[in-house]
Image (cartoon, rainbow, N blue to C red; front, side, top):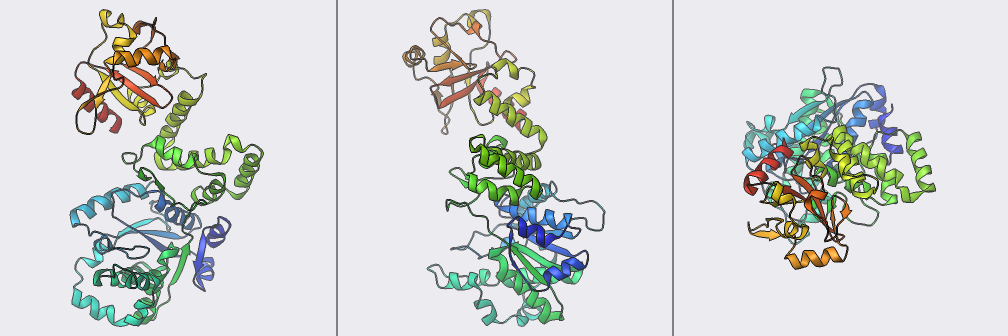
Length: 454
């Protein structure tokens, strides 16, 4: 597999320094990409760079994933309009541990010659004094050279200006490249196109300081066809951590992409071969309403990020939500934990009443009026404002229990409860809830949260 050609046909390649492709064709090359540790999880915006490292390793080269424990304390000004908040060492260490765990899902960290390797630039900066740094590194790169970079010019000419801390960032990142070149035989740095200036500062430092040769390659920044920012929704970033972005929401982010974006994303974010992608595109063009490209895209990425089990539960969730032939009792073979994952994006309400012979004979309206949970201020809120509201909605055909439209003649014992405690309520077209029957609402909330996160 030719690494550069792989990036080309996938539409990922942006810039490449002369001589880079020739170097890569000679044999195994060590190369690295840096990852920002400003959170304890990567988000989908990081996936393009992760995919670059995956292709790099599949082509027989050795990938280094650099997590910026030191540079995270400075902040990269590239593409930023204002200086970022600096992080404490404790927060950085927590973030680095989370990122490393995620990268291990994608890259092969075995003991082979091209095994992936994780490095943290804090390890070589923590004992490097300021005086030694400006003597050993700063003297090799002129202020004129640094001022010529777009990331510097754009900030200096803007309203916020640029601090000395941010101005020195390219020297710090340049030294990362020098250190890995010197100590790990790392001849190539890769990154997004906005990193070109920082990367070539590293190649220049290697040349000026030790007379060495190093190379640069950047990939396209991912953009959506409608001009909106990739990886963002109304709810914020789409994270790789299931505790920050639920698996079902993660899947839907990819499934809901436009046709034009899906044709781009399936090349960038999956490992499908060119022939298979072209066949999928052909089938998709024949029946766009089936969303064949989006389905395969969402499946492939979800399985690699969250695992096959998570995807299978998402598939069940879709069937239960959209397939009228998939019934409530079809969920009864699931464990409680998996059952709750099916409803991970559904509101959870409670009733402090519990199943008893008297309770199950109770009329539907009284039951609905008792369903509640807590708002963000810890105050009670009810799913139905009153018995009158519940009655009115039932008469208008707007209430479903376990996907069955109910009438005033229904009793609770007409419906089966999952493990005798869960029932699914739909109020109108847009409001639904998983209702939990329990004696102690507070204790049950904690138990469910622990079970889902386990």
